[in-house]
Amino acid sequence: MIGMAKACSGGGSLLNYIMNDRKGYELFRNNLCGLNPKEIIEEMNMIQDLNHRAKNKTLSLVLSPSIDDGHKLSNSELKKMTVEFMEELGINADNHQILAFVHTEKRHKHIHIYCGRLNMETGKMVNDHFIGKKAQWAAHRIASRLNLLSAKQIMFCKIKANQNEGFTIPKSTKDEIYNKHLKAIERQYNSLEEYFLVMKTMGVEVQPSVNKQGLIQGYRFVNVATKESFKASEVNRKINLKDIVGKPIIETNQKPKIKFRHGS
Image (cartoon, rainbow, N blue to C red; front, top):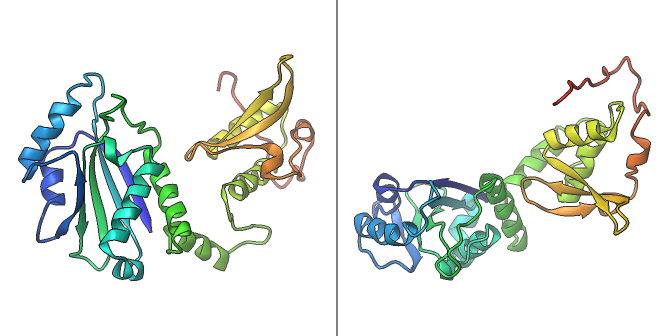
């Protein structure tokens, strides 16, 4: 299963493509009654114009099961899967203007979701920060729950088939973070800040945990894409950041010492 998402300005071209009866059929809709793209856009504009600051007020989402899974899934299962996908992205289907359309013209049956970002109950906009990455992981988690094949599972299997010595296949976000940590500590550091920066370039933010006395009592690892947060000990009990600074992990003739410019 593949999940895709992006915030966009919406418009007739996108909705005309989605609402094409020659491509498929409507799965479900919420808070919309228009009969054609023009009427639906007019409806959505009435709500979206309540927020004057946001630029991209529409979400274009795609959920695509594998070919075999797509043939097996019923419409009720496709709808349930779509609602769960949106919930993973912070979208309450009952409180947003939504049109979901199934395209069947290709071997891959897939669902296009045209969604207004504005929550009609709270007046808040759905956070679109890293929404593309969030959609990928949301599809993976849903596929895992429903025993369906996900794109990330396929990727992991391909990696495993060609894996290098010492590389382990991530089985969870924690495993992925730990593998990135192992890669990061192949270098020698003069300060923890250098290590933090290297981890951040790999999509993991390391945050100190401060107690009431203002003292650092540990660290948390945050997956930037999914916002999942774990204590260092939860990721792996072997992690000890105190040993990183000034301790070369590999021979210096294998990899050069990382250099950082001031102010970077």
